[in-house]
Image 1 (cartoon, one colour):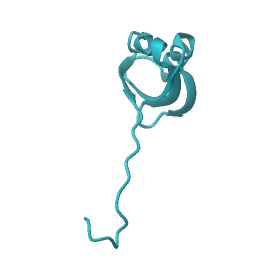
Image 2 (cartoon, one colour; image 1 turned 90 degrees about the horizontal axis):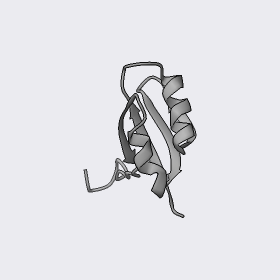
Image 3 (tube, one colour; image 1 turned 120 degrees about the vertical axis):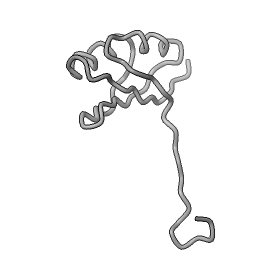
Image 4 (cartoon, helix red, strand yellow; image 1 turned 120 degrees about the horizontal axis):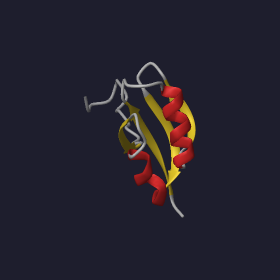
Length: 77
């Protein structure tokens, strides 16, 4: 069973703690709660991922993507 690291955006409605509890019950293993920006970071089995979108207070569920920038002194800017 494959797992994916996810970014879950929370709506402004309701308390973030209640949403985090519901996400955990739906199968998300919470790693971080970024309260200032309303994002929860965690991992979930791919087969349980659709259930996360149905949690009240969830705006979106997206895979975490790694972005790399060229060093400041490189030719590509």
